[in-house]
Image 1 (tube, helix red, strand yellow):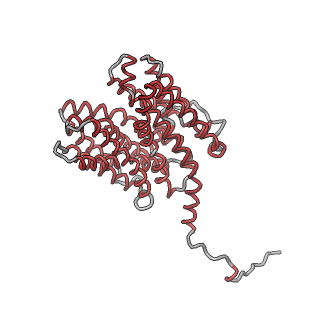
Image 2 (tube, one colour):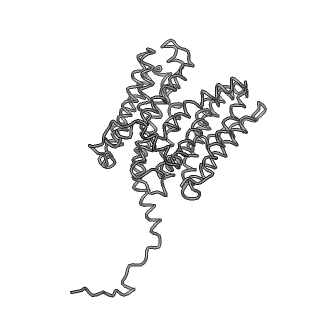
Image 3 (cartoon, rainbow, N blue to C red):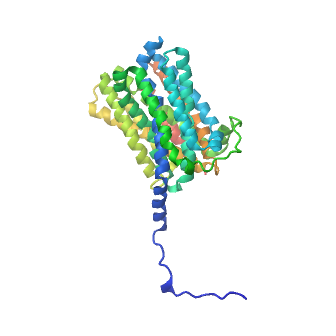
Length: 418
């Protein structure tokens, strides 16, 4: 017998929901709080461990019998290894889970710092390579977690909040490690940071059952290492994000690597003041990541935010190149902070857009492939900047070159890529 339609009077129906999207967004952000907190913790601690070595580089170099400038080699080896581990980590994350890989990375970082305390050059080189293995997979692992847990509208903000872990780790290295070196020598400082990294493994464990639920025991580990890079290069939007990250990461690393030297050598400021200006730029970078993450997806599209950041970087590069010793201290702080709020704060928006543009379930591979390009900028940027400054005899010429890179990044996004 066919069923009869049942008439329900209007007064008996539930009132329409006037703000379903607002409630969904609020619920979405509450659901992402713990995944965000745990990925932020992993990012902070691995960044802290990675940036600890440059802090005590002078004392380390003296103990192993090399020049203090050798730290540049250590950093380059770290990022070279990080490029490889970022590209290769995708299958491991899918096989064992992003939380488990993050835990392994923390343990590897602890081993790297511990190995460094042997004070021998060959093991110091091995320590750099091991640190890169720890550092490379951290971002793809967190992207895998957050892309699955975060509503699309909140992705730029959430990814930007997570990426504050990089400058926060740098701030911890700068603020905590020097006092530890004074109290316990550089070896004691390295072991204390290593112990903190190892202890952090247990803080991630409570969420593993929930966040590693998508791991697959049948996932193959031996895959073509160029697969992730190839996927990024084939998809137009991913390719533009990767090239943008090469340009922007070069600007970021050159600013962090040479700002103090520029202020001391060319502008005539003392080392302590120059260090404070760099710290202010780092702090502005943390605030900028939150600001641009809040703006992206809510007020402006990620593409327009990244274009704006590229233009602002270019403007800051030009102004920095024109700085003279007559500039007031307040002006130096101001330009450094604006530069930091742009050149150090683009990462979260770019990673969120990268995840959004990735094929379903491929955010981890897209992130790993893109990091190959990002780390290329990190490795080559400071080297080419130094060579250009040497050739021209002017740090100003170097900052003009960084301004050009900002324009290149913005230019990549003039045309829509979807």
